[in-house]
Length: 242
Image (cartoon, rainbow, N blue to C red; front, side, top):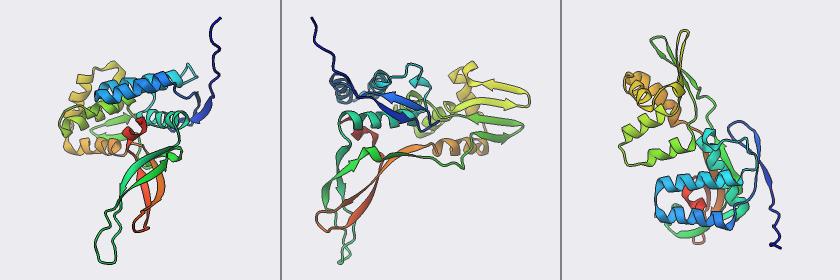
């Protein structure tokens, strides 16, 4: 007779991108071990793959395809999983930037705790996904998935990174009655299309990707030397692996 299975708690979360409710369970010790091994490897692709694997394991709803979720949904899900699995507070080191009466900066480095359950997604609703670039063309944009977004961290120059992320954010190219969806095009074809734009057209698409939604965690902490209260805005994703 085998050992009994321990019942796991489950939690409901709303995806920031569309408000859909999904159900998750905490990640297990074996999954936490995978995350630590990925971090220790310092291999960006390994970290991406393990993050997706753990989130996929913890999602109760089998209809959710994490490859189709926008990157910030994945960030949000992982932070929520970390809070439910390891704890809601993480410790960081913070440098006090308070200006003292003698006009010198405090510069005291002190430990601060932030509550990651306060995570929120910041989004600029003035940024539209349908972008008219002239010459009869309209580009319909989308939020890239987690893999597309995170692979811009690969070694490459800044211009190439931006072109790649713009190309990965194009959903379709419309001219009159012609609609060219990017799922019918190769990556190289989309990149060439972006590279053939004028600077003015390129800037319109660049504004879209420069204003992607992002997660932030707001918190307050007080310097233990000068007693100055700081308002923290935190968005360092890597810290949530530990």
